[in-house]
Image 1 (cartoon, one colour):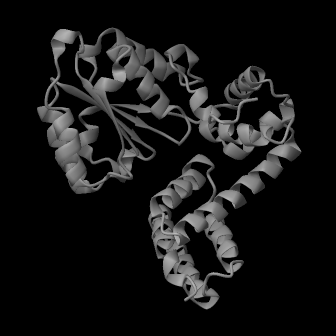
Image 2: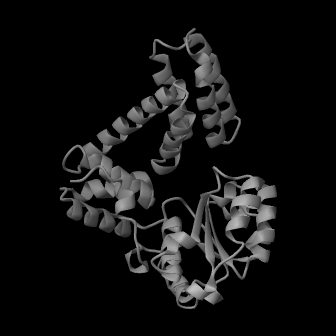
Image 3: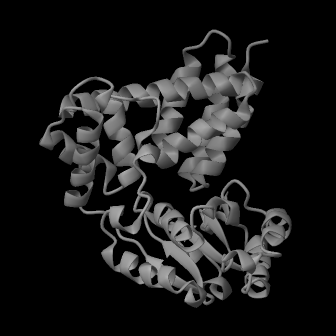
Length: 318
């Protein structure tokens, strides 16, 4: 079994035929792949882990060929969500395309587009209009209602649904066979239940359980607890040492890949911090109580937990 490569990337579908479920969406997009000039801007909306980003990559590969990465710009809008990114990075990328090379246009894939500010979306709408001969946008969102109406009206909207149990279990079984991992059917069904139709989470959970040997229900439960606690400890260590960027990456992994609820992240962080000798525990208690209150009041979990990470250095013991 190889564990140095994340299976979610190793087994990411490369063609439409490898995509699990989403049959109607795949069939419609195949038509655009055959007639690229007929493709409008696209908006993929739906729950995490249902294939939105994967299918965007497959479509780009089908339209642009083997050098598709040279003509594709991928951005995570939750990290680069402001108007400056739109006015510089995106606008410059869409300015020109050499159609003599057989490339119909460039493709911009904006993941988590629903996290972009309203000003950034308004600026992007203008670029979508002005660059329609040189570029196509594929916007990816969990909640399409957070995309402004003028952009929605310029896109063909595809709504992704959660994957069914048969599709996920079949995929997990295929991965186990390729990796030479023994697995039990009830364990794969349990993984489906805890990941709620999110293929990305399911594959990550499978890989974690496989590090303990045969994939059983017990090993799945054990790996879930071990991985979360270890990742939180590492995240705290990085934040306290001043490496905010890497700490933030781990937070993103916990929230959006493993799907750990924000209240669980906060609780594990509090336990991890209070067990250290290099922090002011009184200051830590005050800090965590403040962020706990903010989350209870409905503040944005990702933003609040990211801010908490940024403040951890302030509670280091003098």
